[in-house]
Length: 282
Ligand code: PAF
Image (cartoon, rainbow, N blue to C red):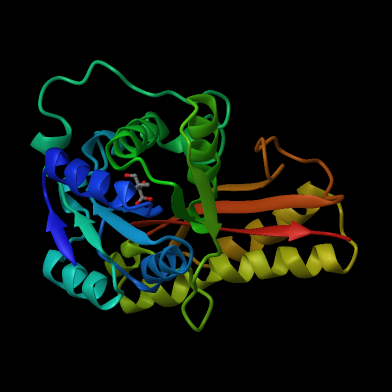
């Protein structure tokens, strides 16, 4: 595995790989790897000839109240995990490398960025779309691997790539969970043992929604109410939003007929956790 910190060098090595006819798979990350990241890397290795993983804690996707500097980091551990996963190139640019001067150009994806997390993290998806567009220009990947846990991010990046004609295939990878169901996230490290236990209610509420829908409940309000009641029983969990919405446009649904995204976000101690499931009815 080669570690690269400059845009010039990663461009040079990937140009050589492309000349040899190799396909490039790309996994953009902010580091602090867990099993979810490893699954993205494994899938990338299966489908692409050369796999590039980036680690960059992108300051422009954090709000003023969300301290980007507090984002968990363990570069040495990440490097050895990436090496073990058989990654070819680890791209670790500095903030100065990615944003050398004042940034005056941003990528704004409309509509999809307004509901769900967009409501609670203004500017977040603009920061994500902008850095991902920059990374796509730098890496020029054939395939990009993104986790379904960040479902809204996945839709935003896919639309951005389509609208801006990036010649790239976005490949969604299912959420990896702990044995008890908690979605894997770098932010889980912020949870103490009581908060860790309490946060399980989020997964349980998604399972409750699934059971209700399977037993014939179609009214979104009724399902959300049942989920909300369950979550509010946990005093350590403070719900931000609960949504039952269309899986492509994120419009709220009144009834669950064929397909629905059930998504939520909550604060548990210092951690902001998100989770979702997609229900498909035959
Ligand atoms: O999901 C993440 O880790 C980040 O939002 C991403 C896609 C790497 C952009 O900074």
